[in-house]
Structure formats: C-alpha cells, structure tokens
Length: 71
Image (cartoon, rainbow, N blue to C red; front, side, top):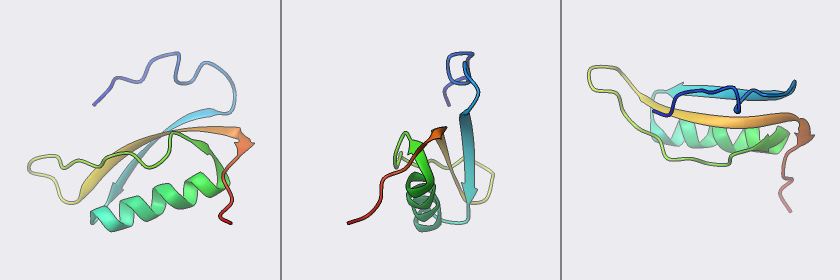
C-alpha cells in the first residue's frame, strides 16, 4: 500500500480514507457513495490482507468539492 505523504494531506479538506469491508461489493458501494458526496479518487481496486478478514481499499478525497451526481 502506498505510504501517505504530506502531499496527500497538504491542505485543509484533503483526506485519505482507508476502507475495510466484509466483501468487495460492500467496499465498492462505499466508494461510490463517498464519490457522490465529495470529489474522490473514484472507485479503486480492493485488496485482501493475508490473515485478515474482508477486503481493503484506500480512497483520496477533497471535502471542499462536491461529488458527481448520477443522471
């Protein structure tokens, strides 16, 4: 996993969100919902950590900008 650097959180309103979910479908739904609220890095690939339950994903968001509305 990429290391969080000062660039990722260089200004107020920028956040890094680590998502843990029971399954890929839940993680994808969470990323989609967050993308409706704020400008995000979008739906990203999920991964599994050996020996740990569920899946993981990392999302970058700008809370100062609104997300994409569905048509």
